[in-house]
Amino acid sequence: MRILLSAAVAGVAVFHTVPAQRPTTRSESVLVRFVFDGDTIDVATVGRVRLLGIDAPEIGRGLDTPAPFAREARARLSALVLHRWVRLEYEGATTDAYHRRLAYVTTEDGQFVNAVLVSEGLARVSARTPLARLRELQRAEAGAQASRRGMWGSAPPSRRRVILAGRKPPGLLSSTSRSDMPSATRRTTRKQML
Image (cartoon, rainbow, N blue to C red; front, side):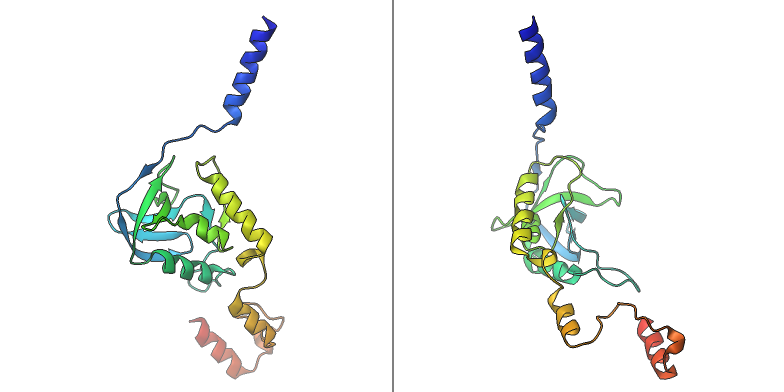
């Protein structure tokens, strides 16, 4: 009886610790029309698609300054998929809180775009639930961290040049208040903000 009870407890423990493989559904080839940022694209016949399991730095809108590596992530995603045919793989929940479709993106030549961005240090793994391709994404992130690529290394190349030249990167606040600036500088700064 104890053996049967022990086997039942062990079976339940294994069942709860091993994530069930949810089936993924793969789309036909679809055309990418626009890249919003490093993890969101617009796809013909589908609409906005958020790359599943990853999070890229935010671009920033209006007066917001982009996060480091945000522009690089968008540029790399554009180079990989913009105006190209891709396949989407859906798993689990199909939309997020912003009504974007959640999907893995694979190019026609078989590149797993989500993992490419993570392996280059332009995005990080952000899965909140077990995913079928989570381990692949985690391996890509570990490789980027070990090699100090992208966000796991130093500042983006564009900011590094500005810092080395002795100037502050755009968007960093100065210790000088606006009232301490000469009026010509205040006018220039005000024009730049508009």
